Length: 347
Image (cartoon, rainbow, N blue to C red):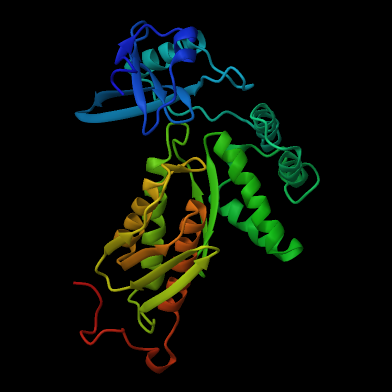
């Protein structure tokens, strides 16, 4: 990678255009003209950003800001000149002691949708896909939120909306509305996500997805694991163990787990390609490792066989959900007892 990407260079639009996307991970290139400005190249994106530090009252403080993506085909394209101008001002303000925060603006859901729609069209997405998204915000359950500012849509509001849509239109429409919000937020540097593990979970994730998905995947998994641990409390009455075989077409996954308080992951699954969609396949193992550590679960995952990468990981996730459902179920014979002869779990 070092042969392809210089560590430091005077950036120009033509140079950025010619630089290839990475095959794995990301490359960071410093701009010689605007000290502090970075071009971050990933597998599908080229983004301008800056990361600085300063000492305030003896405490080292870090700040990070993104100035947009270089994508001449997109309506929100940012060129080198504009990125340099924005970065220069942000860096100067930061060094002068200003309280600099990520700019979130007053973009409404409708405005964000217009930009996201243009992005989908520029990327050649099918009309049926675009119509599916459009229906939710233009005529569907998100219509009343069209003029709502994105920054005002809190996790609590998103959760309440999901509950209301479920009651009025059913779970399919409610999950579709969350998918719409997730897509638009993702494009607007925020993400709304909802996960179901036989446990109701509402999760709002704000991450630096414009850079890559690593920290967002890791932190969301840790948060989910911590939420599971808190929800189970002292684990009194739970079955504790769960295991299942999960077939997904030609693939077969096996998942066995013990909510033991002793976190460990045994992972035996491989993929024939580095990415599924926009996600690095190596991140799947890391996600389960993070959940296991945060929730205190002994977790064994194995793909017994399979050729389609999407089927393999889908079978694994569904197997994990099924095994978790078994493990957290209340054992009526020991509903008031902690499932351990030691009287406690962990250690």
